[in-house]
Length: 66
Image (cartoon, rainbow, N blue to C red; front, side):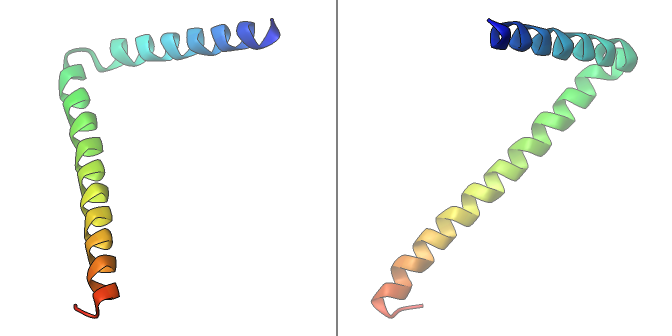
């Protein structure tokens, strides 16, 4: 019961912080949202590329090619 109450309170706090940020940024909100989503996507794509490169390099290294 206590964990449910703490989770509910935490989500409520996140909601209040999100609303305060939305009021603070005002008309600039969509720009900040696009910047945040774009930055996260660039990082995720770079990490995925690094993982694919590492996987391919391991496969070639085991064959003696590089």
